[in-house]
Image (tube, rainbow over all chains, first blue to last red; front, top):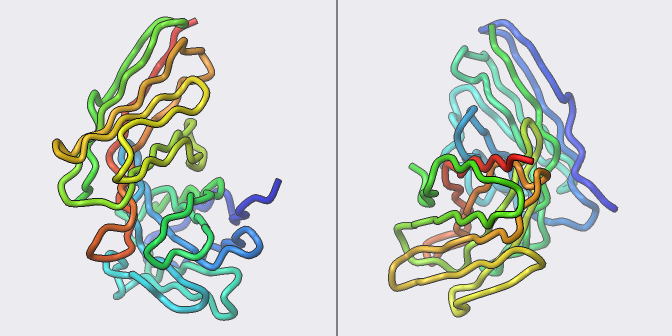
Length: 116
Length: 112
């Protein structure tokens, strides 16, 4: 069964350092999502791509976070510089095309980030 | 802020009992989904109910939707220890955009 791949699974970094996460969605899924999940809370959407275009990044802290999906396939989320408050689980999900119609999202295992 | 709000925040039951979780939301929706998350893992989609549907079943899961009250419920019948997880409701793309918004979740613990 096809799965969403994420790496690394765990990352420990010092504050002010740069960190990057990678996501490979299910083949054929045009929509890719990055979520941040703080312990004890639900996922919060950071950025949503439709193919290589950003559909929504209203909750992305753009002064330190960036996301790209250059060829409309895999994606990278970067934080520079990392802050203590960025410690969280970063989840990637993908779904079929989402143009006003909803398709279920398939989630990867997540990357647990700890900033010290 | 998150749109979906689950109730209760935590639920502990015995194996074999039914578990009911509720979700309330604020704005109009096209659909509502329920997800499960085992500790430290990604989310798994359980069931989707569209705004023109009132009830939906999938195995031991039963979801209801009341758009007039802006609420939904998830019922897990004959619960098992393996059902121990966090359950989240999420509102799908609404009339104003494409964003999926998750609630804070209900933590279910099923005791064997």
